[in-house]
Length: 471
Image (cartoon, rainbow, N blue to C red; front, side, top):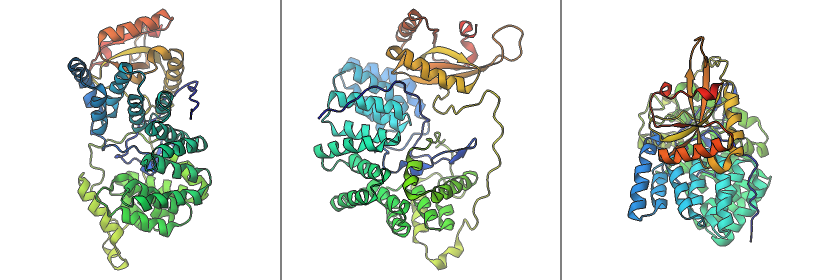
């Protein structure tokens, strides 16, 4: 079998997300997915670290050590990914691919980490390259199918999942992905049959049970879905995604009281009301439209997992699991002792954005101090120009910066009479491991007529003026 893997004309960054961080579904007037969108596509990875960028500054040293010792770069990248350090793992996976360009495995790992970061279009590109190298690799086939589902192309994903399952009958990601894609294409009975057949083989698969329960709830069998998801939450492995899916099932079943209490385990009082409103909107949709809204909606921004999410509970996973168990186990008489007797108040209106903040920039994060060498390739007055500029420049100079990540820095020169003056977003591509590598890529950009300025790892944004980019 051979799968057509034409490279998309352009790949635009997607907002970063973190499965272990639950976010408010409303920001700047636009609907965002809650963590319920983890419904079948989350790669089986460890929880996100408090600061995924913390290891990026160290990865170059680790990479050189492994290269000198003859060890596997792939092992280093997989260790970073298993620790949740996907931002650090991505460039190491790319180096592993450069060392062994004919292997599919580094590209599969790259795709999974990009998916974990919410960069789904770039992940699709990596998975397609992996399938090109080995179209009998079930991980590559399932990964590409998962990316296509996240991009709202479930019809194309079904054949990929089926091919993966022909190779590996018990492939978990392919099984969950196939059931989800069937649901998204109106084949709910076939999806339920897929879930139940898989659960007959492995009744302990937590993600499979979670997705089965949510599928029942979304397609009108809310009571049955609630029973399945309540059983899921009695499992020690249940986390924020399962708790928020439980909350959605409660809303679909008309039980907003327990929904509020479940949401509040992982969110603060301001975002509880936002999430509840989002779930109410999902409930108003036709069953066949609910999954598309959850899976193909806007990815939420990354949550700051270093702060406790709820005033009543500390940031301890075991405490949260026990709290969820207590909620799903309450009978009618116990409800009067509810510590969350009233729904959370609605949030205050968001402040008006500054004139230049006219687009969502969560897909182009701020450059972290010490993140590594990078290339500054443009500067813009508006956020919308920055987003469009990255898409255009990445496509135009794909052979040079196609494997790099977008980063931004912000600087305001104020009202001074000389130029440059005013506010600018600077667009950077990186990180790179050395000055030599950055200089060479910058030379290639300049040879093609592009602006380029080498940015060192630095903490002070104002320390690196780039006057030619403002002329």
